[in-house]
Length: 203
Image 1 (cartoon, rainbow, N blue to C red):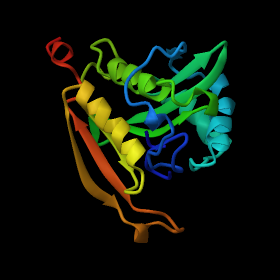
Image 2: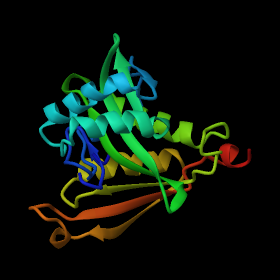
Image 3: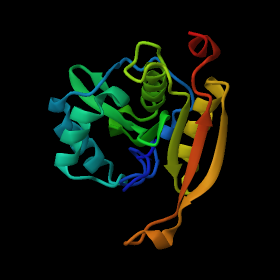
């Protein structure tokens, strides 16, 4: 979910970039009762609040969430319940690999955990970015995220996504602890491909 400085996290998860997740306990998509959509600038304060309240994610500056909602809305998603944002996934297309979606943070409100909200957001986001009418032109066919080795819940969540997409998930080393300026666990890279289903790839 990846949820640290350049890695992914899921609320109920790790920090600034590494994927960690309490949403990661949602093994399969569920009827969550939430609506899913791209974020708006007015959502940024709520995204910051959810990350802060998770007590696990690396919380970025409020300004960074404003920029994220402005510049990367097409590759991100929020979950809304009764008019209130209760979860989000932030992602971006890698500049040197435009066919790859990097999932950076996945966060879910405490009262939404265990309801399938995190999984539903990931499924919605992947379906959106692989659609032929998306701004990426239907060229996205791989997903990357980073997860620390001590976070099996997040690994399981992404493995579940790979299974639903009939895709392969491959782990490789990316950031070792010695490259971080602070005390930080290693971040392993997980690559899922192909994430576009066959009927989507045929368009």
